[in-house]
Image 1 (cartoon, rainbow, N blue to C red):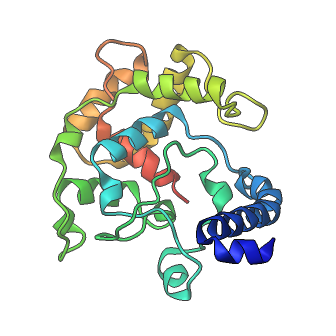
Image 2: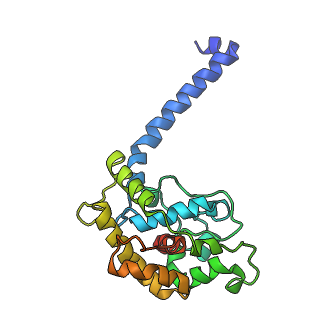
Image 3: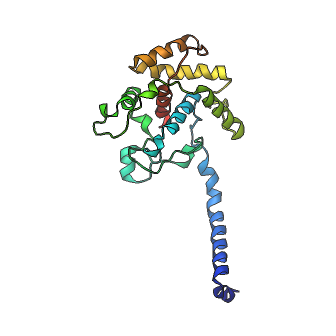
Amino acid sequence: MFSWLEKNPFFFAVFVFVVIAYAGLVEILPAFAPNVRPIENRKPYTALEIAGRQVYIKESCNACHSQLIRPFKAETDRYGEYSKSGEYAYDRPFLWGSKRTGPDLMRVGNYRTTDWHENHMKLPTSVVPNSIMPSYPHLFNKDADLQTAYAEALTVKKVFNVPYDEEGQTKLGSYEEALKMMVEQATPIVDAMNDASVKAAFEPCKKDPSASNCEIKEIVALIAYLNSLK
């Protein structure tokens, strides 16, 4: 058999491929499932954080910032503990990125504040003098798409069994309940900001989250998402 395979390169290549693929399945699959389970204390994103994540994707932040710290000393010294697969269990899609024009953001919530993010998005050079990042003033004027964020959370709950509303997990509830929780999460963020227009737009939310004039700006949702990256 083996002499016949040696005389037929195509079938020999197929045979080698099958053997290697089978060996890979035997070695990789048993350890794969446990590694991709959510790590301890990892919870799904809140609806407001999902809204901010949608802004992050829409503005192509992942084109210049990775969210993947490799297990090298140079990276862990700068960005923090290396990334683990279970930390991405609730990420759809993954935002690992493939380029670092700017620093990795996997742990940015551990060392940047709301005030820093506000100034950085409004005028990057005000906090990083040599920054080449453009400013994003429109994020202070546009409302976050809260309905789409809630719809995404509800979809992944039903389709992918993301454990919203389970004991010890992130609460979602009805859309009205989610709105209330989004306002609760946004309140300390807005209070820590300096932009008067963002504060004025959010003020009605404190009285009635479902009011037609309740406005949570994209910058608030984006900061909520960035603060969650730890």
